[in-house]
Image (cartoon, rainbow, N blue to C red; front, side, top):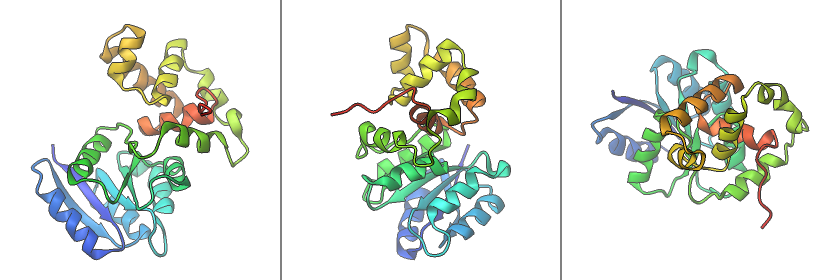
Length: 225
C-alpha cells in the first residue's frame, strides 16, 4: 500500500525538499502541495491524502485551524495530520493535539525521522517527538483552559471497562502496546483490541487523541518534578 502524502507549508523551497525526500521512498508519494491551511483542507479531500505534513504557522488559515477542520469532517476521518513546528517545546504542541493532530515533529528533524513519522501516523499511532516531554504535554493538557476539566469526558470514560480504562492510563503514560502487554501480562494483540475499543467508545481518531483524553479526563496527571 502506498501512503498518499500532502505537504502544507507556505515555504515553497521547504515543500520541494520534502517532496524529493518523500517521493524517494517506494511506499509513499506526494499527492499535493498547499501553501495555506484552506488549500490543505481542500486538497486533503480531493487528493484523498492519508497523511498531511502541516506547518503550524501559515498565512490566512493556519495549520491549527486547518487541522481542526480536517479532524471535524467525517469525510476526512481517515486523514492523519503530522504538525511541523520550528519550536517543539511550547503550547503549540498541545494545541496541535487538541486540534486533532496525530502528533508533531520539529522542522529540524532528521530525514529518516520524518519518513518514520509519516509511516507511524499512517498506521494510526501517536507520534510524540522526543523533544517534548510527557510532563510538558501533561502540564498543558491538565490546565483544561476551556474550563470543562474532567467532566467533559466523564460519560464516555464511564462506558469503558475496567481493563480498557487501565489500558487508557498506560497509553496516556506514553507506553507502547508491547510495554503495556508486559505490564498487564497479556498479549500485544489483546492490548491492541482494548486500545481499539477504547478509541471507538471515546470517539478518538487515533492513539494521540487517547493521550489527550487520558489527561483531560484526569485519569493521568502530570508528575510534579
